[in-house]
Length: 497
Figure (cartoon, rainbow, N blue to C red):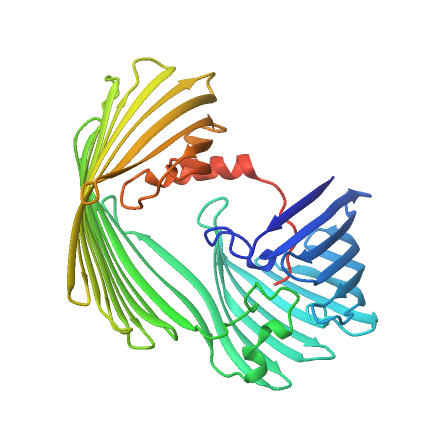
């Protein structure tokens, strides 16, 4: 089995879901494995990685043989690295890679170790030094394990010592939770830090569910060289593998949910304390099912942020919504009213903005192939900029028609207008799109607007900007997430920490 891949990821691409180790790079590679016997297989991996906005280039080729029998697994192989750094240096290396794992007793305890030994090169690569690692994993319960690892690295430019202790949990197939604390000792100093993500959900009874969690990234001790990782790593766009450069933080949150037959309520409190800012978040919501397909809901969100320079920002949103979409009717209605405020105090001047926003959506689907949607919106805004007051009203109107080509494919055409009453100016958006439903409860569409505008306050107006766009809609629950993961499952490229 094997695969060939090519990908490019801009440094600022994505919404945080992309691997930071790949940010700002272009990568082409091939992977494969061959089962020699039932207990022995050969794996090979080769890739070339270059910086999108730089001159750095790296070529890596690795092959290893693995032997697995019972609770024991052993492996050994060779790795070759050729690298041209951004400052013109050659950082080549050839390594012997050996290791294995061994289950103990009933298999709850697993011990593992790895050694990566330099066989010679012009200058040792910082990301591929001599490395010794030993660790253990103990399975406390099904889906919950305690892990610990000790790692030592030795290189021409630095020596390190990392210690990791934490938990690994699998709430359901395709999900995991992990927490760890690390201690790193370098030739210029020592630093102790933690990168922790811990989530505990407690189903108290059929009606109550509570959850709490914490996330922590901290550098307790460091030196000047540790605050300039871009001089040590191949990819300057990626943050350091552990700790942070200038934004250590601790975050804690707790929440609860109460559900009855026809209504439910939820609340959540979050606190984030960091070097750059301290934040508080308060979230609350309630929904009531009036009848089948008819729901009314309300929510409240408050965020306060205190920056290190003394600037303070407060934001809030009070929202009331109504959904009317009975299964026996071709008509459906979605309506939402938002009252928002945003104030910034400090930084040379103060600003305060308050908005009242109405979003109305009407959908008509007379049969299984035709669909017509109407969108109407109205916004009134008040703004105070360092004592000067401004106000204005804006309206949005739009119409979209969609036609199902088949059970999984559809096409659509859309037009919208944004009107400002203060300036008596109107902007338009027109475009076409094609949609596809790869699995149940998921719909993806690609569209292009020939002309367009932007207004973030109106729902759906982010698809009215001129140019291409991609829209993704899906239903989220435990069953649908499992189905999405099964549909999109493929082996990821191995990444170094």
